[in-house]
Image 1 (spheres, helix red, strand yellow):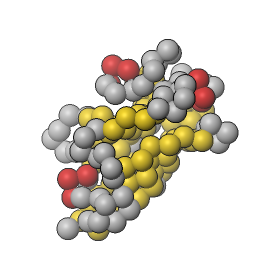
Image 2 (cartoon, rainbow, N blue to C red):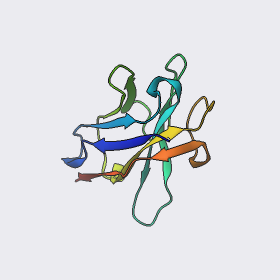
Image 3 (cartoon, helix red, strand yellow):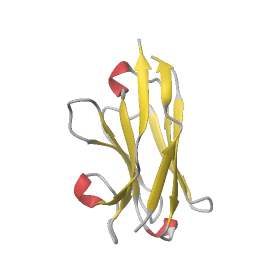
Image 4 (cartoon, rainbow, N blue to C red):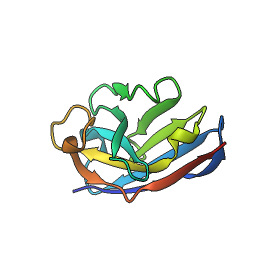
Length: 125
């Protein structure tokens, strides 16, 4: 199983930017898909973005498309989420997720093998 540690969350004004990082250890990082999910108070955990382990294909939730960018650095075993033009509705705890073996992309919680501990992102008006 892989261990995941997120960092980079914080408080930002609407329209601002943040970059989240997720450091991975315990499995060969380049051999599995990765994703970001988020959970706001009183809501279910939802998919944000994913990147495949072959070819680096990326997919996004409609709510973040054009504003967020997911990327990975396999040499550093690190996943990133660049978040621009942040909105108050982006406020949530953001979780890094590692996909199960042979899963091409991580778009639902059923695809997830391991979760990070989460990092809080708060966007003020």
